[in-house]
Length: 416
Ligand SMILES: Cc1cc2nc3c(=O)[nH]c(=O)nc-3n(C[C@H](O)[C@H](O)[C@H](O)COP(=O)(O)OP(=O)(O)OC[C@H]3O[C@@H](n4cnc5c(N)ncnc54)[C@H](O)[C@@H]3O)c2cc1C
Image 1 (cartoon, helix red, strand yellow):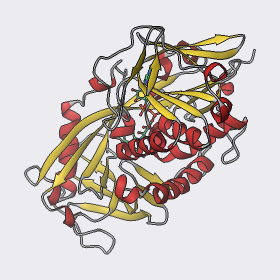
Image 2: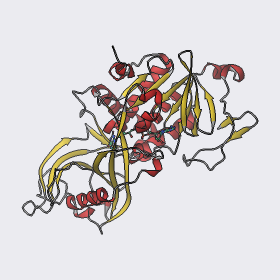
Image 3: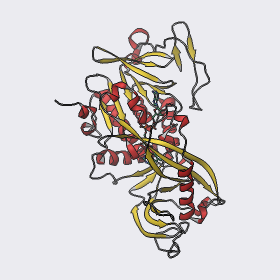
């Protein structure tokens, strides 16, 4: 990758680690050369797009933009999929959003996940697989239910389960490993298209005569561009041009990743629980996702919170982690402490908007500045359709695969 400073040309290789390089920072103004001044032939025609944020939404957008022939620079302040997009469950559902504004987005994206997995060998490279999904109720220390041997409950779910139902099948539910998915898409686009990654922090977007001119990176200078896409997840409101129009809040949720001693005992069944703790209190709704990697992912325990500046500083609350471990051990004797290695205890923030709909579209009154955020608990599912639709919007002015009108940031413009 070449970053040109005013005095020298510096080459930094970001792959294969995809993490922040050591501090070889260019200290002066960075200028990705303007196509008209220095490039020839087909290069000259390419639209320059900067995508800010290396979560699933930014990466999917960068992937489809690059595939469609744009010259893309992805800017990430920490490392790719370091936040919710790396720590999510990765559960996908075809029709669970039916009846909501995101129904078409979700259905399109579910199908795009299937296509992408064929194109990128997703079952090998990022654990894509269709799976069955069950709902069940569990009460801790319930002696009267013995993990009944019903036909729908797999053998490894041997805790005190009741009210079990099939709520998804291999036709309608699937999963990916979200961090591997995000990183695989990016690696593919870097290897095959015109996409480069810059580790740096977006400070602001500069506008001239109502149109995007450049982005300014903290301590790293300025990059000129034709368009910019802001995909900053729960950090979106840190940018005043976004917070002056709409609010993105953050919900903190916890997860653990367990490796059971005998992973072959665990079948591909996602579990959605209604869980009552022995000491009473409100029922909780944790989720359990076995992965083809042999890991079992358990998440839940959410609360509104303030996102720290640095995504690497997001820590799980020990009490919440303890509860998730108890949930796992109650659901299955294979997941009890002592029977598992604990691979990860973590937390992350999902981005929420005030009207519960994602924001995907061009910012009003700023030509060439787009935003994609607020995907709440369905960002991994809706990443591909968001990215594909955004790429069309940026490059041809309208999205044909999903109508983005309901998601336009213009809905937040106050009408007096
Ligand atoms: C516990 C949990 C489980 C989940 N499970 C699922 C699931 O099973 N299925 C599903 O569909 N969804 C799930 N989600 C939701 C999903 O994870 C999110 O909707 C999605 O990851 C949001 O992606 P994003 O790219 O918008 O944000 P993020 O993943 O937060 O990425 C934003 C990126 O922007 C970067 N950034 C921020 N500020 C700057 C800056 N100034 N300059 C440069 N870079 C910056 C950050 O470092 C970060 O990498 C889950 C979420 C949680 C918390």
